[in-house]
Amino acid sequence: MEELARRFFPPYRRYLIWGPVTKCLEVGFDLLTPLVIAWMIDSGVNAGDTDVIWQGVGLLAGMAFLGFGVTLICQKMASLASQGVGTDIRAALIEKMGTFSAAELDRFGAPTLVTRTTNDVNQLQLAISMLIRQLIRWPALAVGSVVCALAIDVPLGLVFCVCLPVLAAVFYLVMSRSVPFFAGMQAKLDAIGRLVRETASGVRPIRAFNREAFQEARFREASQEQADMAVGAGRLTALLSPATFLVMNVGIACVLWLGGGSVTAGRLEQGQVMALIGYMNQLLVSIAYIANLVVIFTRAAASAERVEEVLACEPTVTDAGVCEQPTETGAPVLEMERVSFSFPNAGRPALMDVSLVLEPGQSLGVIGGTGSGKSALASLVPRLYDATEGSVRVAGRDVRDLPLSQLRRLVAFVPQRAELVSGTVRDNLRWRGEDATDDELWAALEAAQAADFVRRLPEGLDAPVEPNGRNFSGGQRQRLTVARALVEPSALVVLDDSASALDYATDAALRRALAHLPGSPARLVISQRISTVSSCDQVLVLDQGQVMGLGTHDELLAGCPLYREIADSQLRQEEAA
Ligand SMILES: Nc1ncnc2c1ncn2[C@@H]1O[C@H](COP(=O)(O)OP(=O)(O)OP(=O)(O)O)[C@@H](O)[C@H]1O
Image 1 (cartoon, rainbow, N blue to C red):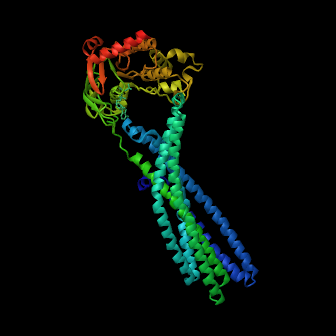
Image 2: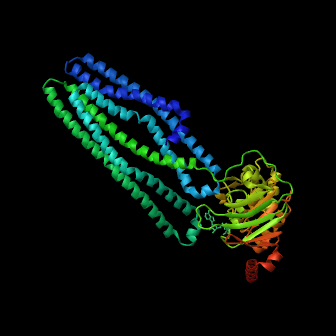
Image 3: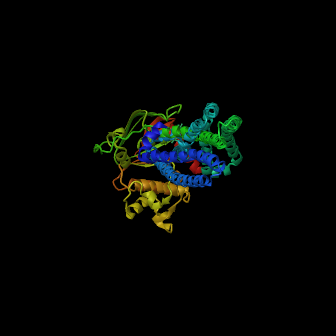
């Protein structure tokens, strides 16, 4: 919490100071009210002096009016500070997430990042607003009530002095036991978010496999766990209200009993006893609000911890800076030397001791069964992850020594999952080159075999793309993501199974186009199809993260049993088809 305050409060310091100050004025008016009423009763009503009554009415109206004014000012300051800090925290979270490598994204997971950016920041905004509007008001009103009661009559004021610590003890007991529930509730919300996301994005397979009941049961279980936590916390905090009212009502009874005796003895006026009852009520209301504040701040503390965890997370892939590094002309475009890699928290390595060399303009196919490490290998090139051991070099430089912006210009990467963002086709294509002309976009679409279907769209390049590109077929999405990578020239194009949804003829046309790209970039082509990799200058065969063969198609057919096995089985499938 302190870390967030130190970082995000300074621009809003004036609201955070002047807001509570204006609130203090309001508290002053609240504390004066019972005294004015006591004066009106004792010196006006009981003495039959109507002037005093009218003066009292005027005073009360004036204080109410001024109180209204300062409340409005304080409210405005609270809104400006809480919304401002919340917006700044969200911007910082988004900026931080932008620096995360795939390892950090794996570690947190998307649903919790969404909950932290939305729900947790909302909790913090509420706490800041309460900090300004209520944190001073209610404790000041509680203490002020005790002081005013003591000023009226010391023995009766002592009843207030007993009530306060008893109430504080009740709060401490209840809140110290409910805090763990609030932290748990946020974690359970993450789990619900994850399930909603899975269900929403996987609605088709869920229906196709009749898994609705299973998904529903999981969702019900997660909701029940969250509800149990909330009920546990609610059960404890629900004790607060009756317990405080019990203490306060005993206090009021004592004031009436002792006060009645004092009035009869002529030591106190009736109006003073009424003022004391008024202060007891103010103390009660203050304590009830303080209880609410404790709940809000406890939740906010749990949220602050979750937000701070994201902001404090240092990305494992660090940028080498902004200064472009000279690359070696004539050096291999890609060189891996004894590379091993393990995903964070994974049991066994995804790649073991992989070495390869890809010369400029050449192509390297990578083939292997599912889970053999092909995507892991591809993701090391643009540094989505860093190799655990060994070195990855692009254009003669270790990838860790190249600024990320330079590396990602040298390497055009097409990930396995064809993901588009909402906007237009043009917006999606311009990721590598913001200023790319229409001619350049159409050239990239032609090479990616996507020009035909984009041309058929009524709006062409301005055709809308819905979130996740859901208004395009899987094959169309794949071709658009390939086109996106081809918009600006690069030294190396990495295609991670980017033709899996294409038919054989389109796949072949894509390969031919890639071989004739302007600038002749090298290609790292990952695929499960022999036909896709067989025409590459070299093919790397992976099995469970290990290199089983590296050579031309013919060399591997002759010398790599696994490659021959894959080739035979695919040939048989084609014949059977
Ligand atoms: N984010 C991750 N965290 C932990 N382990 C992972 C992660 N991604 C993949 N793995 C594991 O690493 C191994 C290699 O995965 P990889 O995705 O590289 O395989 P692949 O050859 O590309 O498979 P496919 O052809 O099915 O895409 C697999 O055993 C997989 O279970």
